[in-house]
Image (tube, one colour):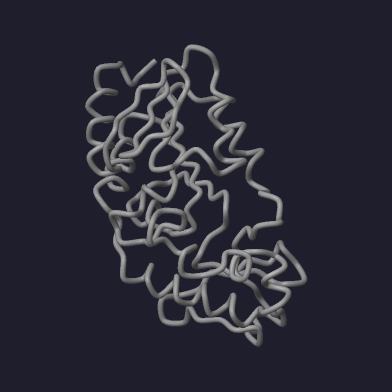
Length: 232
């Protein structure tokens, strides 16, 4: 049986694809007041601004392509049972070929009904812009994004995956954003942990730090994992 490789990815995973990060110097939060465009209160105050913000994010995403890091993680599925938990709202993991992707903070190319969270709709590259007046199946819609001030509904499934991991990997995150940063604490004792980031945060002893960008780091990770038998 293949070992379960669970990977938690953040903004640094997609930075090499040209997707703007939020917290880095020059990031989106320096350009937009975060509570105006990414909070529940902000959406209630000015939904048109929020729709416009995410329309621009979608336009940027449609110009982007998966980088070597995304492709490398998809390649690992040949030898491992790979599950990706991502804080990113882009679809680059899926476009790279990864089959098991859990989005913690929502998905940019989806919207959901304002009056029914269970009604989720996928936008197309030909028709991705929305406004407060957009109606699908009789419902006004909002970005399928977990705003600040809202719960993260997928955190429990993410914890379950981490608790089952035979190898756990963190890529491209500052480990400052909760609850995602707390996933590290659910890894079983003795399970190997790798952390890929060019500017890594302080991590517990025993974590294997690979201090580089995602694309190069995934190549190094694959090489290091090949030293272990992928089959149990």
